[in-house]
Image (cartoon, rainbow, N blue to C red; front, side, top):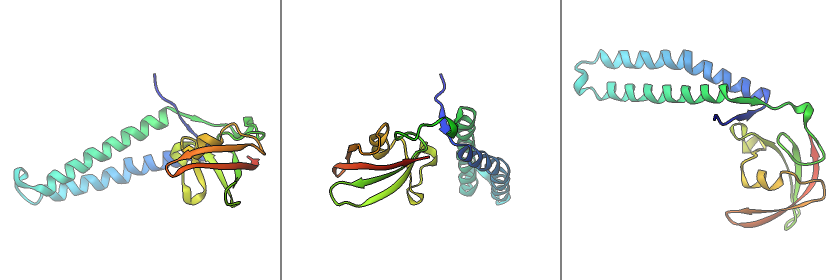
Length: 157
């Protein structure tokens, strides 16, 4: 049985664009590198040719993995989500109960996680710890440095 990859519509579009780029430009660039390496002489002693062929294999593996993600993708419908508790695609403002600092994250599918953009994976310790919490709830989350306590301040979609 295939494992689903949950994505937003935007995440699926991004994945499709990246896949298209790899299949067209990526493959064309790789073919050019192999051709240039071939022109440098005896293939049995041509390290550049071997490296280009290995890179081609890695490119094809990445394309196959991305095609599998796309074919097993399930798009999440934001209109069917509940803003009363933390769930996938929720924007959640949390307050660290130890130091009083607050931060706002969006809980996203794993492939869309980007800490710089304040998008944390639903599979991360903080993401898992916040799931199902409501405003006012305190989540105790085990992280590598110990246990953190976060109070859910606000939830939105």
